[in-house]
Length: 316
Figure (cartoon, rainbow, N blue to C red):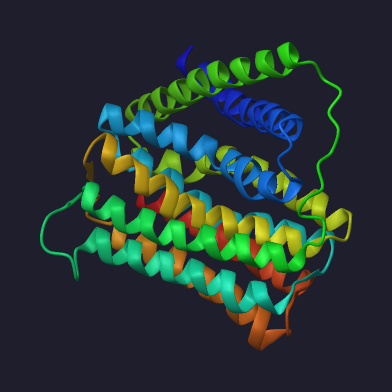
């Protein structure tokens, strides 16, 4: 029964995040908020809601490996798996601003996260505390400020507000159902990950970095593939890179305020892999093929992801 609830939980996480995004966007439009602000806030936060809920509940249960596995596994899957699939659908050509600003910011976020978890520059201890959370949230605020200013330059319709025909009660009901669904989805996912790991002698990190990570990355996959099919490929990369930054700076910025999070001893290598994968994306975009991911790079990404999964399984 727990295994069944685990699968249902992942589905609920993804579906409930959609309901929350849709209802919040509709209400914001009714209140006269521009589509630009909605995109930078509601949609961006909404796609990271599954990771946040899983990590909050994991923190309360003291399941730190679930937290780290979910975020690091999601970030690696976002680049290698989702961008790999997206590049097979259509060539992914992006603006230079994404390469020179967003991807380097993701690299900085990964490095700071590595430094905090290994305590290289910030003292001793093997827990993420609220001091670490403050550093991550400060970087996150800088990222949001940069994104808002960049979007204002790129968009001329900053004041555009779309009309919404749904009634207030329908929007409110969808939002409440989304909140309930994402809570139970997160609870069943965390409980299932811990149960499966115990039953089969696997680490909680392995389950979280594979099944849970791929499940909570489904919103990014849908957005990126749709963007590629509509030839809006810059959105595909921006969605992935932005989601990775949100996962590190926002989710791990909040969690230490809920409970100190024990850092697994092996996590430095995993964060190093996440950093190298992000660096590889930068190299592919700038050095290798000049601002474009093609099918060849997509195949390389997918092969690397298979190797990463095999490594996790062998390690247990």
